[in-house]
Figure (cartoon, rainbow over the protein chains, first blue to last red):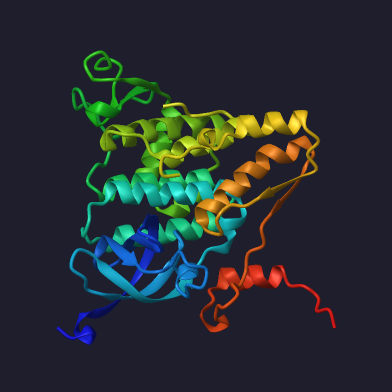
Length: 261
Length: 87
């Protein structure tokens, strides 16, 4: 097959990169139409590479790719959005890396989903602009769980199926959602969940991003919400997310309350 | 990132040395990519409170490169670090 027949173009967000051989890299990219895939970028570790700057993680770029045997190869690229605000603030940068890692871990290779691509793009834009980066992340986590088929049950008790009362309930990640007081002994790994935390989680699940930004969430409540969502994500992925531990470390340095799942 | 945490960077040793020796400046030579940037910012947070000057290697256009193909971040860095011509 001639080279021209093997070439195609695609928009992509670079999630991750790792070294390959002397001067190459393997990039994990997320595209709106082809899903997540690994591609090879040749020579991008040389200082004179014309492409390396356009292929940094968390960059949205237009790629020209050539079909390869094991992996497609990047033959050209151009930056579409580089989110410079993310690169100036470690708090924003660490959360953006967390978002990219979440997508990488949740989405199987070649599983195409335009809404999830859109969610990642919107999340990166919001992280670059918003003051409340933690709520941006909680919204992204909840929507990602929803889109990947792991929507937690927050309306009725996962044990008995009854409507949850307006009181302190429990959150049982291993059982898939909220549990009432009576069932808390029957479900696996229950954690106490305040009524306000349940309301915030429901808002994140049902509301739009605009709805979420209108609500002011105090630090303690934000930490509790994050703890429940994190424990659920760890349960679904069966592992922790590396960038989350890093965010915790930064918090500890700033003497802010930590989540500690 | 990628399983290499801040504790793998021998930071305790460096901070100890900074306290015992007369260190005037710490030059961060991390890669000019995203991980390098995050590492440099993290180390700056740790070192700055000790009152030592922290600098990072200049980033911008490489010798033998091509201006036409430079991305916006590289160009912005190159503009930030511009230097007056000696004429």
